Length: 303
Image (cartoon, rainbow, N blue to C red; front, side):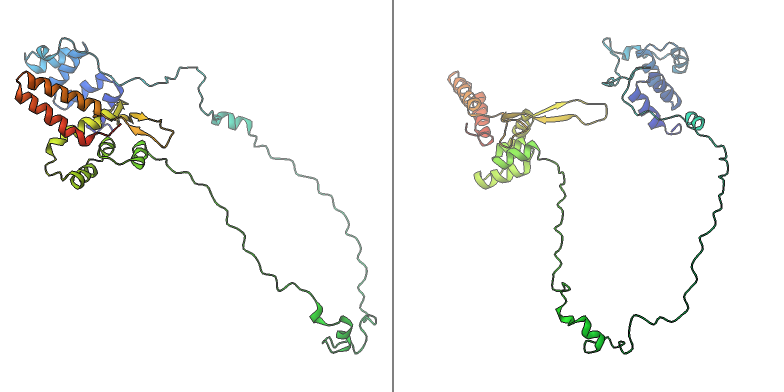
């Protein structure tokens, strides 16, 4: 990391370490920028050495009079030394070794018990039990007749094993965005533009109105899209948090509508303004206002 100049400067910029930024720029030969940064932040320990390398060049004129210190925003929660933080606490290695004993346990006493005496084996042939001639175990034999008919035994072979039902596992998925919700309800050009779907909106205008030259609509598309979006700046080098503005409903509902810039009321006001300019004899200005009102009609919706 110490050899990567860009990483050093980026980390210093993110952490607000102005001294490190001055050092990096001076090491890379950017002495004017280093001196400008040192003077802007009033780092007196670096200014004399940097001015010697500037050879009389005055850079104070490049510092704005209303310059302010630019540092990254502070974190929302700052840890306090000795405070009660909600962090998992692990045992130290020292405590673990202190509580663990490695003493050799004493050997257990071995108690010998005499094994019980077993009775002697009977080596005489068994005379009881099966009689002579009972060796025939077939169904038709003498021994088999005593068992009865084997066909009467109910062994349950006709039962069919049923498969156990599969367990359904509930999975969690991402919900629909607000743009997807209002486009599911209505897909007018104004809704598509508010959702950022400019290409689909132009395709729809070509099919319905026979649009040929879409260039005059580009600034209107941007204004309509920007009027629907709200953004909150986040941390440095991170994307802003964007949140669409709604005219109907709330984010928890499915039936919502976006905030539209061009409404019937705003178009009527433009027509009135154009009529007033026409009465005053300002025809070029009136023509521009009427053209603007005419071009915003496809990007509006009836109330």
